[in-house]
Length: 82
Image (cartoon, rainbow, N blue to C red):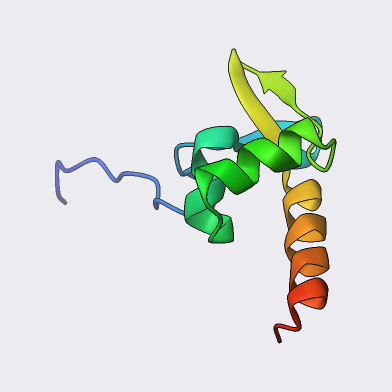
């Protein structure tokens, strides 16, 4: 038998910047440009225009992941991306 302790497997669910508010997954504002391929300015404009509902979880500003997906899909439709 080994004396080594087993560590839980590291998954995407436990990445820094990901939060849950109730059952809804949320993404920290500073992580949105990385995962949604947006610029910081695009994120700021989306927040100001009301496309992203800004919330706080554990003191961090977050946006529901559904809002990010909706914005990216709408942007792709406007730009003609596939």
